[in-house]
Image 1 (cartoon, rainbow, N blue to C red):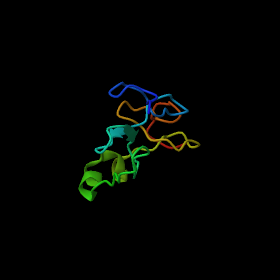
Image 2 (image 1 turned 90 degrees about the vertical axis):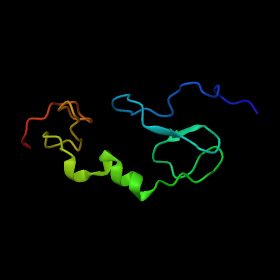
Image 3 (image 1 turned 120 degrees about the vertical axis):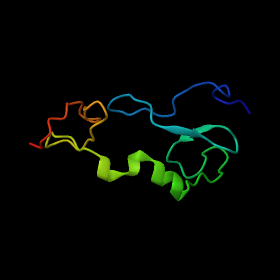
Length: 97
């Protein structure tokens, strides 16, 4: 069976349709293929990729209390560490409109 890529070759599984940024991924411990970070199972070999509750607790993306929402009243984005909305790209002004 020929793979559509060379093992170990860097490639992007999926990109955000809005900003083009690569979505997070991880390596399947069973077959070594890259899968999306939130995947429950490997799409190649089917092994379970369940995440432990401890790992989820350490993931800063799941701590909603620390998120700063975009100050543009019509946007649903979250402000990144640079103070820019990850969805619309507008700078955070400190108050919702």
